[in-house]
Length: 178
Length: 239
Ligand code: HEM
Image (cartoon, rainbow over all chains, first blue to last red; front, side, top):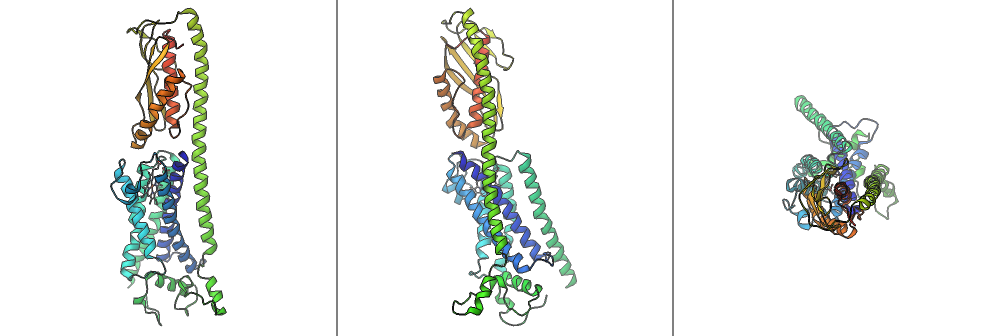
């Protein structure tokens, strides 16, 4: 049924936007660029929530593609990398991104405690995961040829790169000052 | 950065907790060792903790807004995708129907001047219709094979070749279908045989759209119609 196909596309796009927004929120927080008017506790809480929502909408996206009989996505293609019969690499990127997002969100669960270094290493996976998800979307998406979709991807890349640059600058400044 | 005083020590905390504590300090509350975001669970028997419990999610309003926005965006986009497909299908159908009506008139005229064809197909080239780039090899009074114009949609080109014998469409072969994406190949593997049997049953381009293959169905009908146009231009009609 086409409805699953529409849902695959729309939830994929929303998951992508959420992932980049969560990334932006987290990087702005750690670069201490959250401004004075907004409380950092609020900022951090929203960052956590956006991460959870990314995982939720990725779940909807995967379930919809599984339900769409024309997508060729089965359980094996969802859980095991490199199993898709078409666009194997691009679908594999989606699978890897999902695992990475899941690890990032789960290791940040308040009840679970990890060593700081472990948590940080896992958390940094969100950067390559967002990049993998972006490539996945551009390669397999049915909307890849539309101007609107391409413009959205360009905007999302900008939104992701800006705080990364800010954070790197922040790190460089702190290293110089210490 | 200096390490904050008092337990828990910074080494026993996750980065999130440290960030939360930093957040708390920056918000002007240097006393609390843990932030509101990670504060201890409230005790149901201690009213003093009730108020703190409310602050476990300082961004509660924004959380609800983000969830609502995400659900609304997903629904709106799904709706827009469905609408765009329906609008495309409707506009194509309109042009197919207009062509079919025009052809019916031509066919009547042709039947009036040319007796029904019954002899086997020969290899006389037939003229192409203005709408189609179709080429045909046919006996002007019998039948033959006619290639329809290429009808492209967003997934790729569709082109059919028909065989007419004794006033009947006896075969429809899809000589081009979208193949740039394996997903299209899979869809067309299912849809093309169904479209063929639709065409053979209808003996015209008035065929039903196959669910999940609307673009291919419409382009198939258009190419089929232009093959029929080419046939009727060569005085080969379908009874
Ligand atoms: C197991 C993991 C995944 C699988 C099996 C999967 C599967 C798919 C499939 C089959 C499509 C093509 C849909 C179409 O026909 O247009 C697609 C597109 C897409 N996916 Fe995924 N995906 C996965 C993970 C992800 C993740 C983690 C994200 C982002 C956070 C994502 C975002 C997208 C986007 C934005 C599109 C393009 C939608 C469009 O063209 O409108 N996917 N995915």
